[in-house]
Amino acid sequence: MGVYAVTGSASGMGREVADKLVAQGHRVIGVDLREADVIADLSIAAGRREAARKVLQLADGRLDGAVMAAGLGPAGGKERVNLLAQVNYLGVVELLEAWRPALAAGGSAKAVVFSSNSTTSTPMVPRRTIRALRAKDAGKAVKSLKLFGRGANALMYAASKIAISQWVRATAVSRDWAGAGIRLNALAPGAI
Image 1: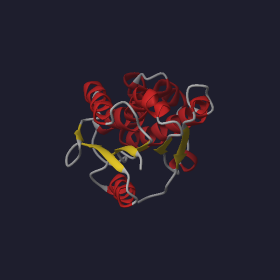
Image 2: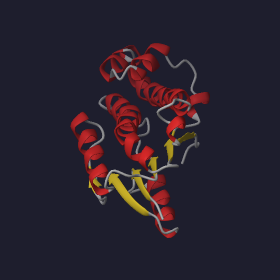
Image 3: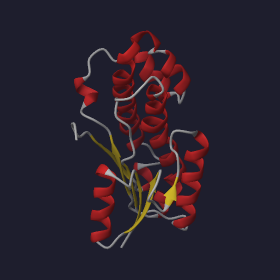
Image 4: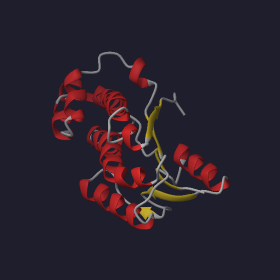
């Protein structure tokens, strides 16, 4: 059976995915803030680097798949807008980029990213926010929403999910991913 990394493995959709993979006989390396094989804070760069390193170490440099289920919703206070950018976009892209060689070593690996149906249902998401996320500039993305007050969280949530969907679309067909036998897809569930 295979070795899979699952972010957000301690709760919600990530836990359900991890449980299903284990029930099918796979080995799961869970990543979360608690109750996981790799305890990591994906809202900070050092936490993402440490999560990437520890998963690669535990997987002996070979992954058969990755499920990127860790994510935050738009509720919360002023600090949430930055957390959304860090976890929902950078927490996916930076880990998958770090794990890509291990996924390629798997031969026919699969990577699934949890996006959201808000990519098509949230109006007026500023393109400059999406561009800043795609450029990995979370600070600029946060500043781009400063004028929206309480609405900034909902817009950053949608922007993070639009940006990650665009990243998946562009990356999935590249030589480094499809050319290396890695299937990369995004799911877009509704409210859970």
